[in-house]
Structures are given as C-alpha cells and as structure tokens.
Length: 95
Image (cartoon, rainbow, N blue to C red; front, side, top):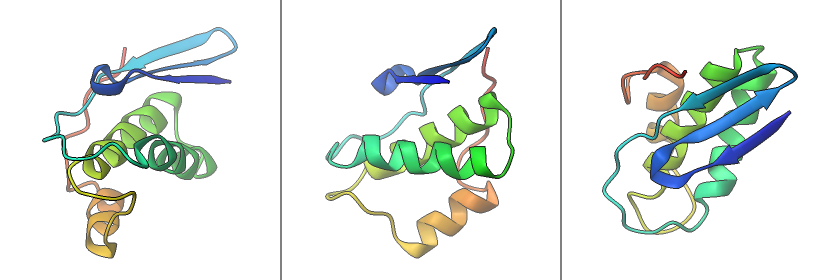
C-alpha cells in the first residue's frame, strides 16, 4: 500500500490495483506541525478497523484538517471524540 498526502488537495491511496483520491477538507490554517503524523494516525486507526481505502483516506484528511487549525501537534479529547463519532465534517466522496 502507498499513501501520498497532498496537503489541501487531500490524499492518494493505492493498494494493488485499487486507487482512490480523497479530496482535502477545508481548514483555517494556523500551524502544520504534526499534521502528517496525525494524518497517519487517523489512517491507521481506520485501517485497523477494517475500513475501505476511501474511508481511511477521508478520515485521515479530517484528522489532519483539525490539527492544522490550532497551534501544536495535538487534538483535544473532545476533538478526537467528534472525529470518531463522525459528527465533525461531512464525509466527502473519494474517487
């Protein structure tokens, strides 16, 4: 599997013959510190839950978009809970 982050343009994910592009999630940029690490954490969280490549990429984009909206590379427990419950951002279609 290969995952390429594209910043505000989202990410590309390829595994075998399957490839998806997940569009980015709009964010008010404050600080990019830790965005890649949190993207990876979000992607792996979904992958370990046996989610599709599209679901993994979309969730990872959502996590990274929340990270860049504040100073520092962490999210609060409330932010994590909102992301995990799916109420944070509408899931966008990956192609």
